[in-house]
Image 1: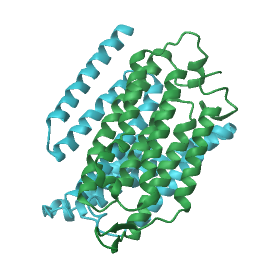
Image 2: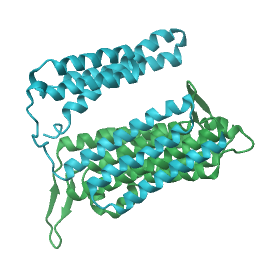
Image 3: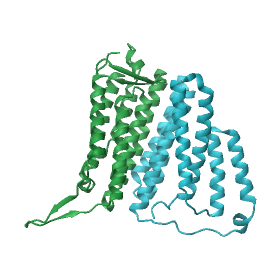
Image 4: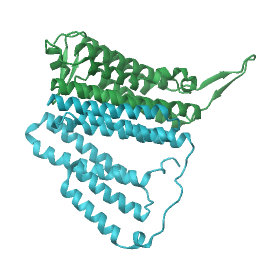
Length: 201
Length: 218
């Protein structure tokens, strides 16, 4: 087992070294931003090599931190380069904009996501919502969606406190955490899909 | 548990993540707490530039919106420091440290000046690259010992943590707490808004001090 772990570690570290060399050679800021995402992956690889349920629990926060830093950096890049608005390069395809197909597809994804529940379900359902918004060119006030994301996050945290301090109500906490993270990921993903580039008006 | 930081006075358990308040971590915690309160309460100053060779001076105006964002980031940074100084879990520590890194980038990046934003972008790339050795170190600790709890690690007579894990952890913290070293980029620190920029330096100092304790305890 240790041999396999060592070989895997060597491989991941090799990937890390290659990515870091690329980062050192590259001079263009945008390309470095893309490469830094590549650098991020070996760090998740090292954690994944643990191959226990602990690793699963550690990858998620690692991934979230990486994505948060990447979003922050790309926002800085947008501001620093003075890129205000995405160019309106939308293709006007009738089937996507007016037909029922995107609605049915995203409805399917949302329903399937709710059945899956938890983080994965949130991802799938969020993808459905993103797809719907993108196909319809949604432009409205999103403060309600933001509030929903915040409240569901609070539910998630409260459920964790129930796990810690009132373990006898664990079933309630499981439902709270599952539902909370589902709502939160849906809301967050749809925010990413619609608010991108519009927050600095 | 007796470690370089002294015997813990108080243990705060969140499930299997145990915060411990030894004399060392408590003093770091209090320092972070006091400075967070200062950031919350203080009123930012306008920066004055003296016109050389005369009595005249001019003030740099800063938008309220910008200062509000920087205050929020400073408070978030203070909270992350509070966590990083007392947590008893190696991975938890790395997460708090990377949170410190993100908020430091945020404090600096809010300034509406191209030079400052360029510096913030470069620093952000260093901070993001720093997460690789940081998480890598924590993962190797878990792989070799089967636990991430510092209390359990310090209780073992034979330290099973390989040197490479400690080195990676230190390297990662250096990457995340890189902000003060960008002091060379003077624009970044000449940015107006008195107490907020200091939060970068203080948070880096705190996580550097803490990682020394973590490394020696393991």
